[in-house]
Structure formats: C-alpha cells, structure tokens
Image 1 (tube, rainbow, N blue to C red):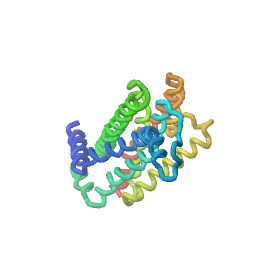
Image 2 (image 1 turned 180 degrees about the vertical axis):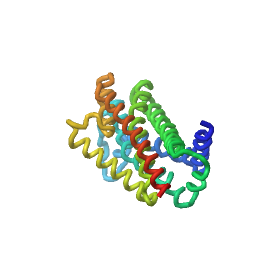
Image 3 (image 1 turned 90 degrees about the vertical axis):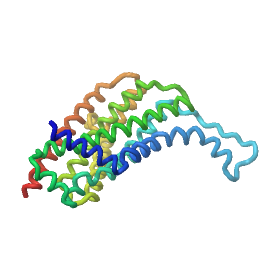
Image 4 (image 1 turned 120 degrees about the horizontal axis):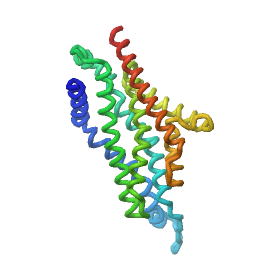
Length: 258
C-alpha cells in the first residue's frame, strides 16, 4: 500500500509541477460558463452590432436552467474530452520514451499499482476540474437566470464524471502500447467519436452505452428522477472502466517483457 501511495503522490506532484492543477480546471470552467454568458449577453451584443437600425429591439427566449446545463455538458463532452486526451496523452508514453518508466519498474513495483496510480491521479484531476466547472456554472446561472438546485449539479457531476472515468481508463490503456503520445491522443479521441456515433446511430440497442450518459442525464433533469437506463449505463461504464484497467496491466506486462 505504501508503494502505491508513493506512486500516486508522485503523479499528483508531477501534475502540480506541470501546472495541470491550475490550467485544466480553468479551461473546464471557461467551457462551462461560455454558453450561459453568451446567452445572457447575446441581445446586448446584437444591439451594439454594426448596421442595426435605430430603435430595433431584439427579443430572445430565455433558456431554462436545464437547457443551459445541457449546453455546458455538451461542450464538456466534446472540448473537455479533447482537453483531457491532449493533457494525458503522454502519461506513460513519454515516460517510456525518456527512460523514466524503466527506472521506475526496476524497483519491485507491480504493474497494477503503477497503472492504477496513474489512472487515479488523472481521475482526481478531472474530478476537481469538472466539479469546479459545474460549481461556477451553477453560480452564474443562479445569478443571471433562474435558481438551480446544487443537488442537481452534484448528481450531474456524479453521472457525467463516471463517463470521464471511462475516458481516463481508455487513455491509460492506449498509453500502454501506443508508440507515441500523439498516437495515444488520436486513438483516444477517435475511439470516443466512433463510440458516440455508434451510440447515436444504434440508440435502440446501445441504450446502456457509456456515450449515452449525457442524453440520459438530460432525461433525468427533465423528469426529476433517475432513469433505470441511466443506472444501467453507469454500471456498464464502471465495468468497462475496470476492464480497460485490467487490459492495461496485461498490455504493460507483455510490452515490458518483450
């Protein structure tokens, strides 16, 4: 256990030295408040635009708090995943290239401890960034639009964060055998795109797909109850996350032995 804690603390400190604990939350916050601020100030921006006749009045429907939250989740589901993939693409690949990996594994450290420490440190960074972004979103929506319960924000963060758990495990998996960080990013983003498109195209058969969690969250917000399909999707996501980590350990063992 002490070995694992040492590895985990090393990853946390490394992320701090690379300022990831600063810029990743800031990027997530910017993504989360972009749509609410745009929707609030859009009439002002249109009225101050060039070529607008004097006395023209712009009336835009005020979006609901649920619509605003889903806009931000949509942005986090696209731009946020790209940010995570680019940020974590060299988690193992760069260490293998620089020789740090060999120095680390010279000690009697199991591959499972190494993989899980990498994954959990990445998950912690994502979790802090995601909840910071959702909290700032909650503040601005309450300030500029209407009241939204923070309990809803916590529930959304729990379910949406589970989707990012799988994304993090997938990135770690590709790190174990991809030849370079760029390939890791390409494979990770490509896999998420394929999974999302497949889930959207065959939604009748892939209701419990991890990529369907954002859609099921929307259903939860509109019905004010947790759908059965969302709970099943959550379970499938956790199972696939564990499977990715297990395969990562196997790939790591075979890669280093060969």
